[in-house]
Image (cartoon, rainbow, N blue to C red; front, side, top):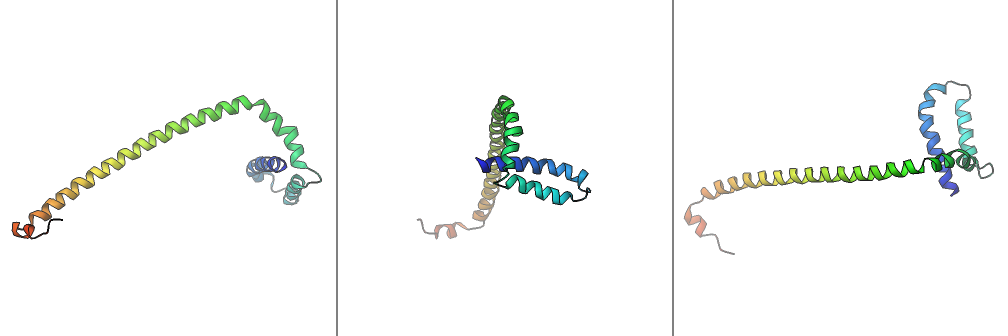
Length: 127
């Protein structure tokens, strides 16, 4: 549980840091403070990640639980529909390619067989 809290808080920190890094990276000792913050999150003595998770992240997730569940159900349904759509499309493309290949190869085979005389065809052993 401790590591789950750490990775959730760290992921949120990294997501926000991607945008805020552009604005505040020019502050003196910015990178040193950022490193100290990550060490504070990670340290088993300070338990920074657990503190931030219990104080901010968990209450927010608890309040938005129904919205998150609704979003996940909707996303699962859309994902299933998208998978079916692209699956059908892929099968149609594969079937079209197979039919085109068969018709082209049938024409090539018929042309090749026409080039043989009947005597050449009789000499082929039946297996």
